[in-house]
Length: 148
Image (cartoon, rainbow, N blue to C red; front, top):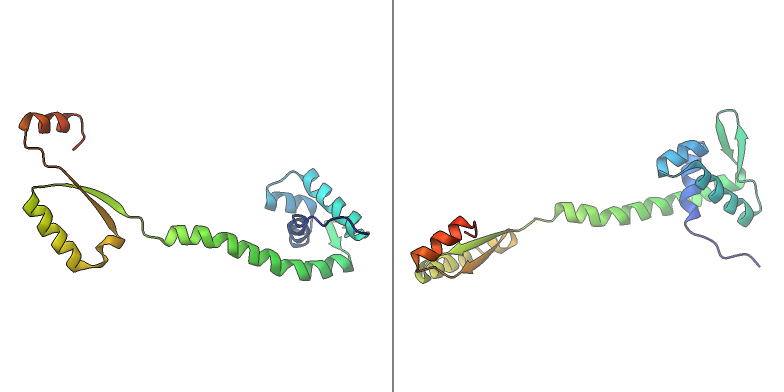
């Protein structure tokens, strides 16, 4: 009976085959070379195969490793695509700006009417209506404290 397979090892196999060396894979994955060697050791133990053969300029995959690479490479590419969907979605989404509007009631009503006529303006910004300060002293205090 086999041990439980560690799916994290897939990326190590693919990285080493792509880089054709353990050190190249460690740079690509931003990990220590010993971590790559340890992961490949786990793969060797699981598959009971050498997985890679040392050659003059790095490593060469065994036939089993080449077969696994063909199976695992599309999985890694799909996972990277899925991971990047969130960042692409975040970059494409429009960041709303928030505006505070301080005006008398008539201007607020007119502005609301105008905004409702535009329709899509709420996709781009948010309006917060704040109370109108009737007291001049209070307004000056708010201006000095940079609240308005």
